[in-house]
Amino acid sequence: MADNDNYPSLLSQALHARADWIEKSEMAKFKEELRTFQVSYAALYNIFLKKGLIHEDPYKQEARIGEIEVPNTSGFSEAERVEQLSIRLANYDNQLDFLVNFYQFNVEFLNLDRIKRILGLIKFVDWAHLSMDSPFPITKAVMELTISAKNGLDPLTLSLFNESLSKASRTTGAIIGYLKILSDYHRESYKFELRAAITGDMKPGEVTLGAVKKKFASAMPGRPFYPDLVEELIKEDYSEDGPALREKILKNLQVEEAKPKLEKPQVSFKQVLIEGLQVIGNVSNTLQEIAPKIDENETAISNRKKGFCQKIRRLIQQIMGREPDPVILELKYTDSVRGTQAREKVNYKTFRSDLDKRIRVLGSYAARGSIPQKLASLSEEQLTQILDRFIRDMQNTHRTLSAMDDFFKADAGDGEREKVKGIKPELAAMKNSIVRANQIRYEYSARKEEEEQMRKLGIAPGE
Image 1 (cartoon, rainbow, N blue to C red):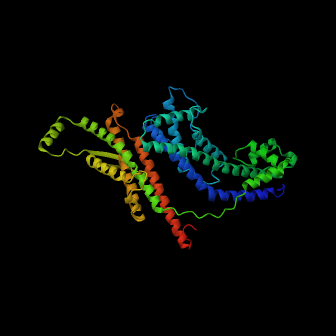
Image 2 (cartoon, rainbow, N blue to C red):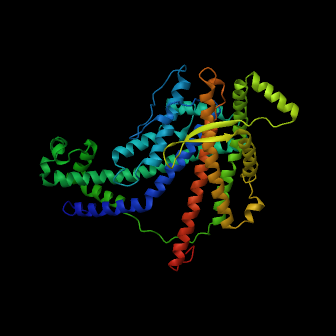
């Protein structure tokens, strides 16, 4: 058993080993679960938007987040239901994006306060217990959205929707498990600091909650005071149950020795690339939804701008069998590399013709339950080149479509803006597919690099 004299030393060693294990073994897995959770929610959120069950929050893109804040969980009236859900779910999407892409994932940064914030964010919707009978207003409302969203979905989108719901539920439990690992570590680390800074120099009879609190501000400035952890410390160090409690803590902090890994069947790197191509191939469905909307917007704007002279000119062109004058759209977008405004002149007819080609080509790579023979017969190098080209092409297409959406809305003017067919939900779905395909491409590169490093060390893959 750990007595009071050597317990601080044993605890210090256990905490250092535990922190090292979390950093090296658990942190990457924790972040991956959070990323899966975020992507799953983003897919659901975009379907809610596309079905018109909630509205796009006009301030969503302008939000600036400095620290995680759990969105409002209070109830709301039926009259304000759509507005409140639109605002809160947009905020939830932003908060999850900030957590996954801007938070630091290390033991020191993820302290007890931030653990509490992450836990609150993950529990904002109880994905594991979605029910119309839920006592939580947001969870009940999301269940209502879920039921409505499923009506009329095509089989592919319904499959994606159900898979996203399943992943949100599964990852909730995994994330809470990682948060508990971090919380247990920080609780014991906090008590270790209390012993070193305050109670270590006090006599047993002097250690009370009030006495510790009196010394706390000067001994541990800037740190939050947790009464419950002080009470735990007192029980562990000065009660009859102390030895058993300390022994249990050391046991819980102990890092189990890594068991020899069983040889796993090798994962086909080619299969990883094929999965990436099928993910980017599914963008064809989204582009098919976008095409008629932008056609309608372009026609409406072109007709509105045609004066009498232009109509006579077009009539003459038709009589003479000549092609009409090209429609040139002057688009503006932000150059992501330079961070500056850029302009692009787009011949609409040429762009639409190219878009139809992209739909046909991408559609031939989309996932349909089995691997197309043309993919299975290609080499890894060929698959990599195709995937790289498709991702770059879709990134450029997404940029142009986004700028085109802004152009149509701006050109329509305030009185006609509501008539413009917006494509923000489709653009968001398209972006998610591009991001996922990019992740798969990086996963492939990482695996290939790892394989190469193992070969240099003389270790055969799979050993």
